[in-house]
Every structure is written in C-alpha cells, then in structure tokens.
Picture (cartoon, rainbow, N blue to C red):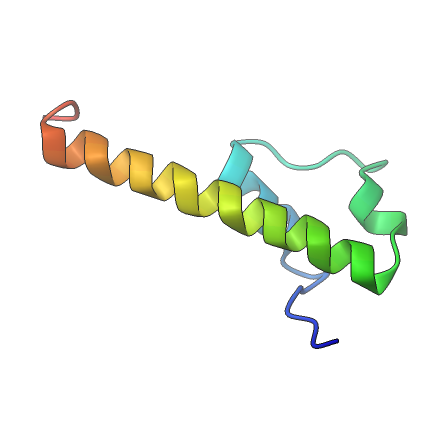
Length: 64
C-alpha cells in the first residue's frame, strides 16, 4: 500500500478540516500505518467538503 499521510502535518490538516487540533489521545497517534491512512483520507474528505461549502457560500453571496 502507498501511504500519503504525514505525521508532521496531521495536526494542521485536522485543524484545517475541523477547526480544532486533535487531542493528544487521538486514535491517529497510536494507529497502524493502514489505519493512519484511512483516518488521513477521512480528514481529507472532510476538508474537501468544507472547502466546497466555503466556496459555495462565497459564490452565493453569503460572505459578501
């Protein structure tokens, strides 16, 4: 399996997606590489959704 996650960026990535940093006991930190990749992908999906919502709000005038 090819891994795309980065342990050094996870906290920032999580913050961008959810608006807060993960806690020290977050599952990510003690997970296997396979599970880390699945968690990373979930955060990526959340961030993609958030950005699409933010963009649609901007385009719709909600932020003007």
